[in-house]
Length: 415
Image: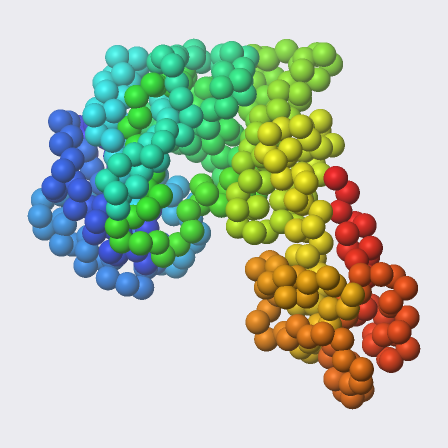
């Protein structure tokens, strides 16, 4: 195996049909002009993954297959694939993504010409397989850019100024042993980058060598990790950038005077604000306005309330958050199966919005009733527009904390 140029590492779990699709591309369309192996780490699949592997190995694909005795998690299974890589270089390939072979070949040639590099990275295509087209490029590089070993200062500026995510890379396998490590609060792409930069230089290339498939012809049977991280991982992004700076400082490659600490913290806050704005827009698109509002409050405190996304959502947030909060309060109350809307100009419109924002279908929305049985009252929530209207429902025996006034909810949305 010493003569293998590239290890293509595919971790998988109960994804036989996706793996079959991925391996089929090596037979049907990929033209890789140097020796390679396909390292598959199976996270204890219970489907016919092994049979798919055996079928393609029988067709001559250079597959090395390893199977976990139990599901050990995504990170450990990817680590397994990398640990088994025997090529000079290694690249991760998700079983539902694609290689951009022209860029891959050029990137490997670049590494061959630059033996001091431990890794090279590139932006990647976002790809719609159903339509057969690339939809966008995830960040851009103007020109191939190389960073020498321990050049932390320049690389940090490059990342935060250009908003670079070093997620898709080709790694020298000799560097993987010490540079691909478990991290929980520091985003792996930034923390691992710090250690690759300790091992040797790194480069960011203009031409992509990877396609992230956002719409597969096989459909989707799992969420995309990268997509989910955009929604929630900004604190880990911060942790990763801080980890990167910590390593550089401890290795003597970065000076961390008080003024420099302040300047770098400002850079990180700006970087994170952009990611938070993306997350806020995505949560709003998913009609989860409570989460969008929480992100807005953090952006506002950090001085980014005038970001275009924040400005766009600011006016609609109070109403949408209030209605969604009302839906949540009613949903959360055990055994409540009815909500009364009192004093509302258009009960049908409010009901429609409540349903849209999450009110359970088994909870009835009704107009005020003159009399209900005590058992029915105990299972009914009330929304009143005016605080003065609460008392009449309390006098009838409704639970005090199930009679919600507009000011109880809207007053807590501070924009």
